[in-house]
Image (cartoon, rainbow, N blue to C red; front, side, top):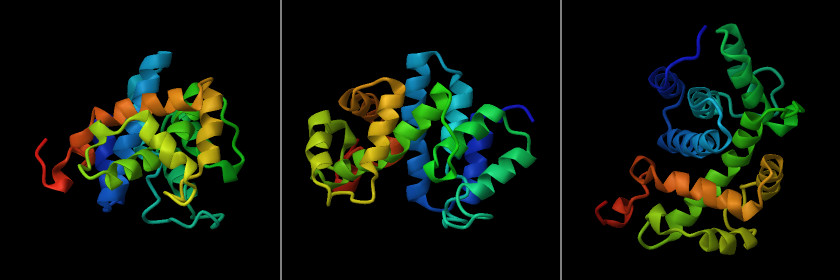
Length: 199
């Protein structure tokens, strides 16, 4: 099949994913990956849809140890059966290191590098009094990065590895993704409304 439109990809994600937090994660990853599409001259439509769908099956099949139906194996099977572009399938497979699929394209590296980082950045925004991601700075993320108990589930080694694959210093990478996420603060619910403010 041809690459789905952004709306088609979003609708598919919503069909598979009821969790608002997982949907926001997909939006955050999309923003970060699109920033790298612009930086590297990537196909924005392909890169954006790949980012939206990278965790398609996570809510339904979260067990990464399940060799048949675990994440992202179920999504990969669906994407192959529906003839999604091989570049998209490759990147989704490559973002799960435990599958052992090498990341060979910039899209693969961008998705891998952005995925975990968005969780850390959102966690930093959530603990700020204003709950506004637009007030977060790279130094704020750096401070929390050093605290391994903060957002402990975030794999910092994966983020560092992904940044290296992109050829970037880790803090330059954080800056790129943070700026991209700040551009969709309202969609992420991190524009101050959670603190009772107005956007």
